[in-house]
Length: 546
Image 1 (cartoon, one colour):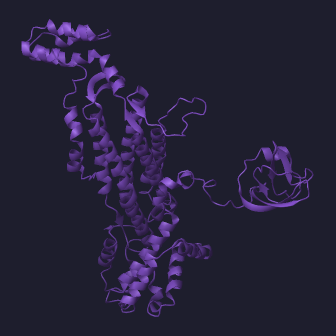
Image 2 (image 1 turned 180 degrees about the vertical axis):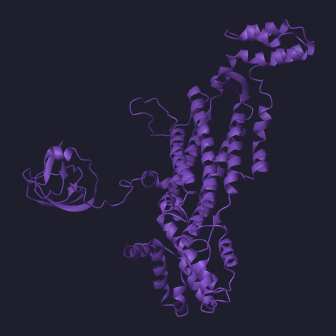
Image 3 (image 1 turned 90 degrees about the horizontal axis):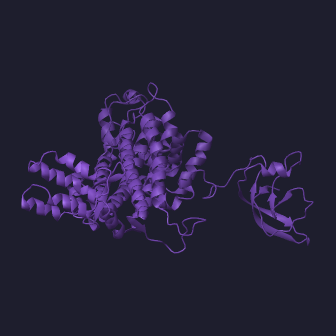
């Protein structure tokens, strides 16, 4: 009998050695060799589970077959992967929000792009006239090969993994898989040994990783970034004229508008989006140490550097001509640093919104059935922005390691980059999750104008800045010092400010302008800046928001 999770509702023979009662539940387990299991030994272990079927005798001697959760007392079992047993929450709790990255950043995605590179290289060889051993493929043969790429499925990837269990080499398994798939095709079967011709594994891998990044960015990450920027722009333009008290060092400062403060984040994110969108993704295809050694021995009259460049660029990747065995990953470091900076700006946004919610500037639209606190029924917490901030931290930690580790490889290469590269999806996955959480939070925001107005009503001292500036214009001596004496550390009211203005020796027109000024109207060009944010982003960064 294998160990299982708690089973409710079963009446079990208490003398059965494989069942131990625990708070009206039963732990089902596989007895160890000496058959000696104590309650304490079970209690002290963390219980994981996988599914099995057990037959249990009830007190009425009726045999009942039940589905139970099982585990081994010595953890010697294989857990079935599910949303509950996944080690990474991206593959469990958050799967629904990040699964669109899976076709590109998963093990399946890596294998699929390896298959693509291997097949495309064979097709390239067939186009080189000097390689007579690989004649030009017929349309039918090319269609067959392209079909292997287009139709590559999970079952195909599982077949590659099955071969890998024998080879213990993931790239060689792809080569053998393709030979198996093509051996029945009379035309391609004649050139099977030209799969992986003159290649080192890293020729295949570096291009596969480049394609993984390219597709994940273009089809998932960049579009969601645009949605996020657009959502912040919408908040900016919708609230362009709503005045808001600024806070520098946490203290009341010159007023702005809510929309303009949102526009700042949209513009900053737009600039980083441009850097990411324009990132140059590089690839190499120069053999074991970057010198085309094997290529030139086999076919010395072919311009292999030119062939390699043609092949790499045909995949939509820029060519790197100077490499050791690996593509040195400098472009990845730069790309990941740009994503980190985008994420840092979003952390700044998340924290500011969190603070504005705390100040009461925003309310959050509630959803029926949702609970904010397990003990405080009134709570509506800014959980989306907190979730976003937390995941951005995890993403940046992983991406930072990728950025600093990947450009470093001992001599012509070591294998440390291989295991690290398998975690690209972790950094991008947590980034994607953070973007979607922020978007979800933005959708719930509702401006609380009453709170914004009330704060401004209580801070007439912010008009000290324009008053002393006008005084400077008209030659009033010690304007800063006079306003400092009036306002610093003192309660300032509308009446006290107006009384001070009336006593100034300045032109009547200037005095009237100051008397008409309020904390609500003293916002400078904030309204115009917020209203023009979409145009500014489009012109400066090329981000198309609609």
